[in-house]
Length: 453
Ligand code: AMP
Image (cartoon, rainbow, N blue to C red; front, side):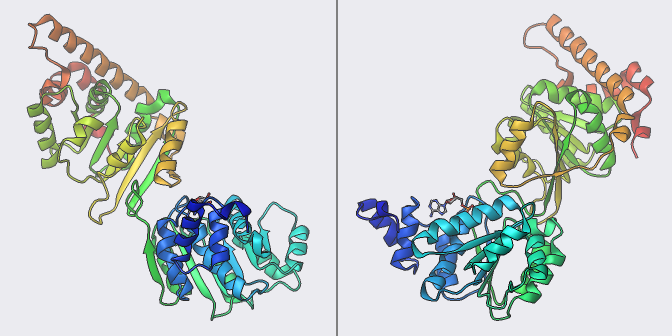
């Protein structure tokens, strides 16, 4: 075991903290030697159960220390009774498989633990040779593991004591069901099984029922976790077509209630007005509106007179906005935590919900920060560019009129006495009566409700 783990007061504490979970001294020292000063929550919760021999389902993301949680009890069993081909860990990706193997090797280096990695894109022969060395632990992606089960002589799972399904939700999303079935059939019944997943989906639940026996469930509360029943998608689009794609999504999901989040008050005004010009029932709510106006807008939305609320983060936070069907991030929030607040407006109280984030060429980094914070990779919203861009001419015209109207009205406001400045959404009149009723230009567009499906 690594020398640096011995003798230091803090390391002694770390060793004791791992031993308190039931981990043997040698292994606890190896964990401390990696600089782990105390077990993480998932390790505290899962390790004692696993050492008792329970099957475990763990809801935890990458970064929670879940690899340690499943590796430590496996290595402890191997310490007592070294056996080849004793554990198999299935991972959805090559990179993750390699990382898992590295942790097994780091924790087991002092006790001569052998590990083999079976992933695609790497020569089968070299992997077959590694299997020939009778590794204690095999980590792999399901497809390649099945390949070896079928083609590599002498490789079988008959002596398996532990099966780990890591990131089960992603394994199932990547359509590895057939391979997982084949692997399960090749495993002995009296093995122990651990299943880790970031989210509890129906498919994960089904898999859990198929392969775990009386499992204990442990869950790490993730501070920035988004609801499981929320379908989160993104739409990668050129910035110049943002309005057009927005109109497309609203049409595509018509019949729903929406909150559209914009970064600035001006953007919220402009978007609401553009949408009204196109015949959508949109109402803005932002910090430049006086509180009574905000409440009036909100009440219209709550009463169902308007089905689209165009909001800024600040305006939305102070108000009791009811749950909506769809949250659209017109602008990617600069503060990633705002994303969690925004999408939290839908999929409340067990209901399902949806969010669509418009990501342009300028937002990629911000978007990746969000995915990192929530520990999820979002799915793409399915759209054909030609289909969305059919609306381009009308949307451009609606946007142009909106901008002109705002300029005109703000100009008028400036002309009036101080304190009497009238902004476009001073009243929904402008958007409601004023615009759709009063603007000849808007009416000429003739889009109105006919535009909507
Ligand atoms: P994982 O969630 O298993 O992908 O682990 C994420 C990172 O946390 C890895 O780099 C581990 O080495 C590290 N780690 C795991 N357990 C602990 C611990 N008890 N203390 C500090 N770091 C840890």
